Image (cartoon, rainbow, N blue to C red; front, side):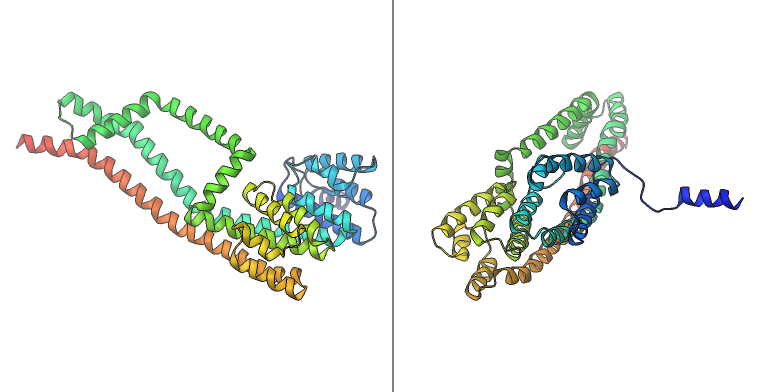
Length: 366
């Protein structure tokens, strides 16, 4: 009996998480943490990657890591092998790994990369948590209006038609909207689905990203969020590169790759690279692009004068992170009442449109 119970314990003990197919951000963070630990312990890179593949709870990530290990064993660099899986590894991560290979400080770079991924995960969770309630409100609001137009209004429309009631303008508008939803609602859903798919395809192209991010930078709240996000990423990435021993010019070149998916800032960094290579200070080069905040440029200027750019960037990065979180909280506070008021006004308008003809008919009877 005891042996049977011991076998049951071994079979059901939560020694490891259950394997899963999809690749989560936690899976990637766990891999980089494990990789940095193994390399710090003196394990060769190829062996460390294979151990990471064996230990990963994501079966898909395990397959990817085994393929990367195969390419590395064939003579490829780690960052070049990882770059083939750009849907798994962010482009900026690949550039950071490249920096570790160039500088010979892979362990330090991977530790910093793990911290960046963890901060990214925490920020994403905060954004998702902040947007959860407004999203639920939006879904409820849209569903309520659709249900009223699809199921409730047609019942009253039939009654008004049978009684020969004269419909006010607002009522006629609601009735026409209801008729459209009932008759062509399926086509509307298909059209919206296709439009969403087309928009996402366009947003993935460089031209699409350039236009969308450019428009976003000009919007009041969204623009502030995008700018602070770019400043935070610039400060943390450049500090990491400089601490890893990468020269300034080469660090800026790597930053161009890191910001590849943000065309406005990628172009700005390319212009800054040209000016710095011509002998101009980095702070002035960034300021002349017009896309970097005065505060960041002043901090970089102080760092260049003192010869400690990386430490001052490490100090300013948390400021931009806090600004991002404040803006997200502010956007959430603005969205919630706006959605509630819009939902209330819309439903009240529909109810008013339904009851107006009834009031008119009641007055006619008297």
